Image 1 (tube, one colour):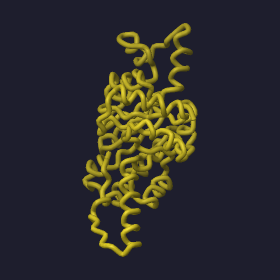
Image 2 (cartoon, one colour):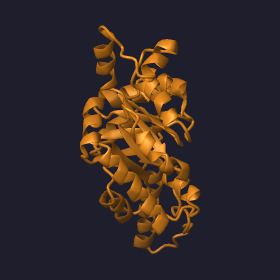
Image 3 (tube, helix red, strand yellow):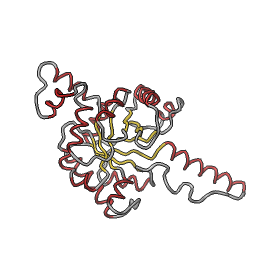
Image 4 (spheres, helix red, strand yellow):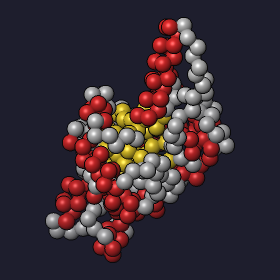
Amino acid sequence: MNPSELSKQLRAGQTVFGTLIVSPSPRWPEVVRGCGLDFVFIDTEHIALDRAELSWMCQTYAALGLPPLVRIPSPDPFAATMVLDGGAAGVIAPYVESADQVQALRGAVKLRPLKGRRLERLLDGDAPGGDLGPYIAAGAENRLLIVNIESVPAIEALDSILAVPGLDAVLIGPHDLSCSLGVPENYDHPDFLKACETIFRKARAAGIGAGIHFWGEVEQQARFLQLGANMLIHSADISLFQKHLKRELDAIRRTVGGDLKANPSAASKPLITI
């Protein structure tokens, strides 16, 4: 899949699946390619990744047909252009709470390579004119713009956020959203589920993808799809490694009748929360 195809699927309401990639190992992309994913999510907000290392990851996953969506540390247009220069197929901006923030990100992602006053005039509604319009539009098809909705103010501003042209999807950050709602890490709470359903419904009604990154049980993740999400980022490579390693070691110990000597809380919380 290429970025343009991913964008079209998101906007058409087709369900797409990804996972959070933490490991920069050069052996990892080949393994990930065989897992049935539509894209990969690389996080630079919470994960320490060198810029050159990140670019190698992006270039490799893109070459394998897995568009790399990179979350930048803050909703900063300059950070967005940096990861796109490195090979990202799209930008995920964290903790967005206003349409003005999305407009600035739109300029960086969808109106490249314009900058300065020329960019400001286009964001204010001026027509690009001449050959510039088709040139910009062709490039924008291959760069996705996604914003995290993870607070009560973001939900209150959601209608204006969704009205910004060029937005491909919104993505719920469940940890931060649950804290903003006053129900920290209670992902079964009615207030949290109602907020998720509202975000999914409004995004889909606007013809924009609606997603969530979640690491819980399969039944919980299926529920978000039933509530209207069509973009699911399932867990993370490091969390999946932890969970399956612990499960298999416990099974081996039980088989030989030995003492498990396992910490029962070792896999009870994700290593990465957003």
